[in-house]
Amino acid sequence: MIVVLAKAVPKDEDAKVKIIDFSKDLIDNSKAEDGNIDYNLYENTSEDSLMFVEQWESLEILQRHMQTEHFIAFGENIGDLVAGELEINVFNSEKLEF
Image 1 (cartoon, rainbow, N blue to C red):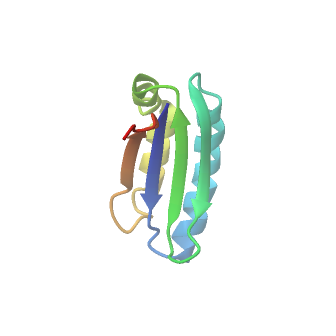
Image 2: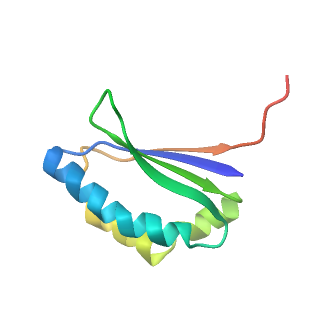
């Protein structure tokens, strides 16, 4: 399983409201994709940021997701609403053995 953490820092409160609104379509459509395990948005309690937490069956499925119309549209819609690039981290969820 692949876990994605994508952090967005809105420019201001109005931008945050718009990002949350745009994310509804992204989340609904992403959850309907084959290979999606979970897809949610959280608001940080200590700083003004939003965190997408995604789970996918494989890296290949995640890469297909990034080519979907709803994913591309979301990126275009929030481009002017964020204070910088999204901070995206992708993890393989296999437990490391020590």
